[in-house]
Image 1 (cartoon, rainbow, N blue to C red):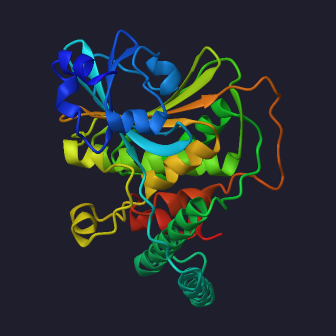
Image 2: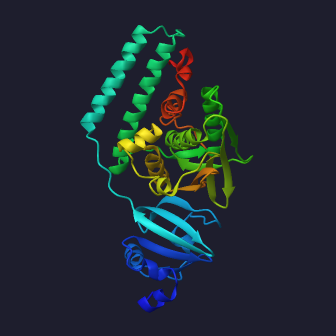
Image 3: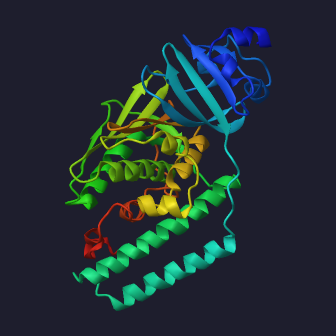
Length: 350
């Protein structure tokens, strides 16, 4: 769009000099784009379909969102804000993350392994001692942190291994929800699951998809807190599967939404939430490896909804014996910052 044409749009002119790519969307089409957007796409995309440029991005009236996706071959995050009948989309390239030395991760793994070995030798497997439960809880928390650092490094090096096979998402969701609800015990959070009656098959790594869903569940369970409700749902739309995890918590403020997919290791963030802030960065990486899109919608005071869009497959689901669910161990690890120490009693000591 020429400069004079851009200036004709009351909002378009505001983003003329923005260093970030900005597109205005109305009626499903791009009505303006700034110079940074033309540089990102390699052309002026004014007049083109927003769905073709941002596949899987659903724009709904009154709902701002943030999405991680691949646009024009680049890993980006997209913030969408509605203004009357117009949507303003800001596209930011994801910054390179600092890499944790593999030697340090190996050392942490060794510490965790030695800790587990000593605990198993010293603690009676049937012991109801609450201090033993605290030790096992701490072990799984340490294991969780080490695994997250290792996964981030693997994603940044394009080295995360995924064994892609046909997976039936409905059964995966139901099994995961049932197991998580069991370990949640008296946490006071209601976890429900809704899936369609028909098979829903995608091509993916069952273990990684399970990890992604547990990351989303962990965030929602943390937001819901005691007395809240979290829903895991699966629906089909055309040739797409939509997995959604929704809570009824306080929602996210604008700054938290803007930084949702960033790696947050700063002391202030950790002190505020008692969480490392790595999960969503890993979840969006797993989503991209599966050709999917991860979106966040939030409204302060009314909760947050995370949605994962995946392409459907016509293949029949199979059991890949080399890429199977880790069962309780995965849940005890991924939900270690949600579960209480009581969840790590004798029944969890495999």
